[in-house]
Length: 319
Figure: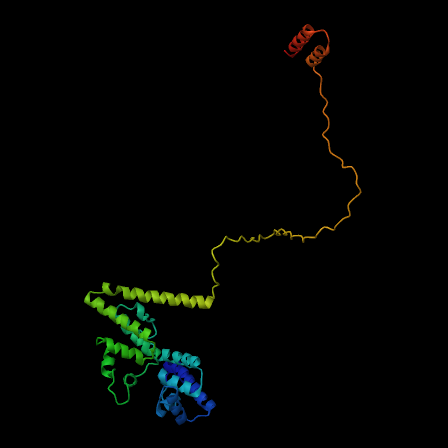
């Protein structure tokens, strides 16, 4: 093997050896593993499982994800580790495919162009383990004897971009790639409806469907964030509680604790003593000359004439 494919061969061999170690640890034969794949809902033939183990002398090729998933579940291994090894190997196997791993695909609720829908379909097939067209054709059968709803010739032309994808074919393709939730299938069909509306010039009539999808996506994002962050319940609308803000270098003042109430002890009545009454200090009145003259005139016995003279003298003293 050349040096250009050394990295691919190394990662493919690592994936195959990991699968082989799972089977050896479980103690199953390759035939028993094939039987157990039916129990996990991913029936896989014995020869397909055997090729996934990389027989000595065989050219390294990354098996489909559906085969790796069936092998891992049948042997009781870790799906997370299997996907990690498989993704690394398949990224080295198809580095030049158009848009496989270079550009992430848009979510179906945001698709409004045919090219974006085609790229999303290719990416969905890659996430499903890149099943072959024949495998997708068999998965779209109601029973082994029924007519398939995904003819491989038609599906191959659609995935190559040479044929228009029908609405029913898109629904069967999405379900064959592992999309089981009906709400997710409806998002893919809503993307197809938007593209057709844009072709027919009636995109404005279906704009509310896209807005509804955006609102649902926003609600799911909020619910996921609330679950991860575990936000506390909002407080009832009451008066705001002011909390002290610590300032570096300043020690907060100690708050005084309320003193407990201690009842006063009953005391015996004291002996009867005269209560002292507080009296106001007497103010000393200053005598006025006119007042003295008036008093002398009033207290004299000289008669009314003397009183008149005394009053006049007091008035003159005032003036």
